Length: 413
Image: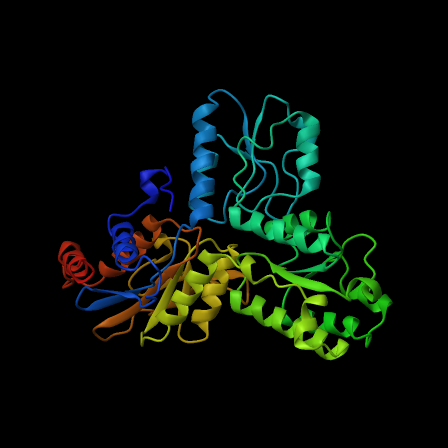
């Protein structure tokens, strides 16, 4: 795996070496058990995989390279580089301006951009329509394009199955930057429709079978289908791709469900399935899979609560929070600053979409066991800050050096 040149302050003296130890010990990624950091009165079970993925580190490296190489020039990001407030804040403090909000709302009008400006494409990629706008202005859209290779892999697969006359079904959040970009690229090659969840996939199935009318489709999937889409014609052959940060298990369930619908509706023999349903299993992002599998394993361990770090608008982080919420109290926080005291924590509630404050989140018993993980766009330094903040509430905790020496010995042959 390539080593990226990212700012040192994003790394951690605890978490980064720990991840490297586990990587060397388990190069084939067969061991998803968490790492125990035992400080005595408080114990952390740290997920096997979490934090910056290949695509995020690549995007960060290119972004800071753009700043270093263009002193005196105006530098713009299409929208947030990644869904992490610390990274985006640091880029803005270095003079980088955002052209759009993550929702797509314009901040800097297109006609205010000049051909000598620098524009960085974020890790989510962008739409073909926006690429054309930038090119028409005279901007180089390829020089600092940080689109994740695994997002591009989805685009390529959509194009490939489109050339074989399949319609593309995109599992993703319709308003998310990545889904908007994938939809834009896909519809160039094939009729395309977006489903946000299993419920919408089940509704789509009724148009495959003809149980629901074409007119209903246009109302129900408004804004989620390509121009000229005809459900009677375009749902006869389909393939499923996804927004790479969705739950892999959800995407696979949706794909398996729609495949079953096609088999039953067209009474397909096993050798005939490919005539109606494209195989797209190879588009699922490895980092998303690893992080989610690590979370499943983490949750097999008893604990008092979980802490998940990351940006509140990070899709992959939200899904990790959802998994943890099903098992035990879970606190979704951006940084250690959200831990207000030993008794108070400010965290994001996925249901109300706002921050709330919880009292007495640390139980009055010892040892306290905490599950700790984060999303793919969260720096190791943030996870370290959270860990040390919680440890600081226990005066009789073991020294960090002793705990790390113990773990190093455990994972060193």
